[in-house]
Length: 144
Image (cartoon, rainbow, N blue to C red; front, side):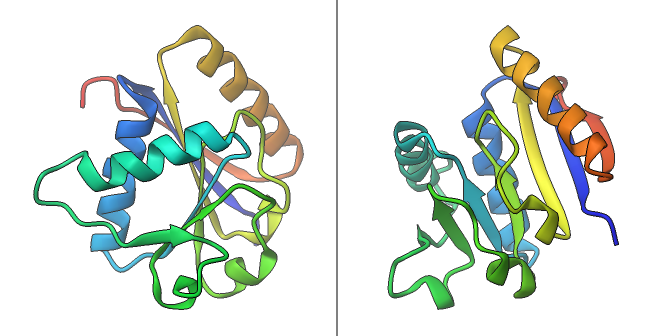
């Protein structure tokens, strides 16, 4: 079965939209690995998960935390492990490149802002996923 990759284009703020998507997925019972090699971006996303919405609580820890086995959202700054894919995790990619090992995941979520650099990096990821045989879907979220 090919990995399905959902690209959500046109986010006003990539990280804030990623927080909303994460909250929605967790509320629906989904477990996520949130990946980026950029430690500053990962730290900012971590902080935003605590404050993006006053009444929202999204349980999350770093993937190497002792509570990782019982937490629905794992933050990952290294290559996400295939073992997590086997446990039903989906992958939310916040990196500028395709995550290593992405072929192990059933579903990958990509959030893309309107910033030219972000759009250019997303186009490269789209092509890489396409070449890897992934099932690609695009959604325009600019009105949301």
